[in-house]
Length: 367
Image (cartoon, rainbow, N blue to C red; front, side, top):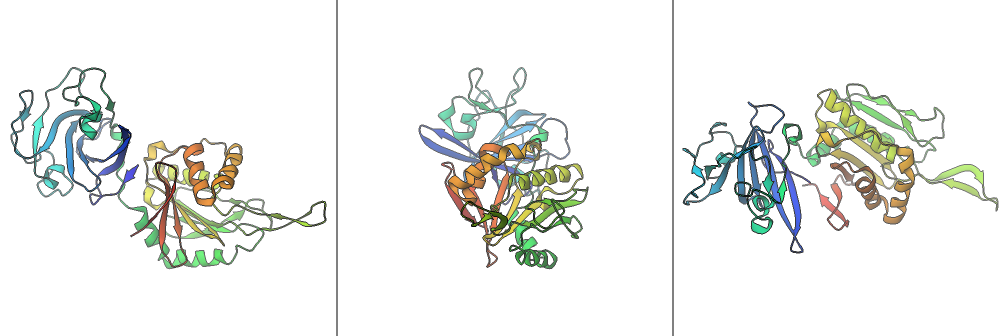
């Protein structure tokens, strides 16, 4: 899962593994050498605990592990050679993201192997539980591939900060207030937003006055949308007892809403728009929710049949409730890591809604 650290230029993830029936965790961060861009990752890897305490580190060139960072005074193993300097050979001394500048470390050269070393073992990540390290392990290694240059996608901005900025924007706030006053209608209403901050009113899906869908065109500058999910209303039909039948829209992002959000992400990547700007907002009388993305953009897909997934979505909501049901639907039926759900409370507080390792709903307040 994506992690946010004080080092904004790092692409950081929390890696979890059950070892001897206990969940082990580390923060795995990649810092790219911007002077060497190709299909392979070039840069530094930093492994810490959840408090930022250094555990391990490596330098990667053309996707291969070439040296290891170690702390403290020690005698170099016979198979390793200490580098000639504690200074980074790639980044400047004042680069606050460089691992050698962050920590007082020794750099140890790892002798090359045939075919190179393009992975880290579980021992490199979690200690001795996983067998030998990448420098000594030859066969049957429990290893993990850290990915190539295309997998390196540092998240520059915490979604909490983006949402805070958004919810204090006068134009955005004005549109939200308009939509809050329309949740009692028999049709959805909404707006789309461009990268320059201008808004356009969305069209009702059927073109009429009684439809729970919205229609809008995504152009090269579109970054987000906001729309209502309305309160229950009479359908105009009656049951066998002569009582009016009610339509009760689900007050949470629908599968089609998720689909439009994913399309906006792809559109942003195609048109060099920051992924951090892309959002979806849903306003109902039960609350206001915001979708953001904090994963790897290369994982995003748009080839879903949302109509076929609707029954799975409805069942998840019925079984687990709005927030947990939606998150389980995303996890089990969509499978795109990084789709994040936030609730904006009436007092302006922002909460990240997520599932823990046991699929328990967890609320994390934005600071």
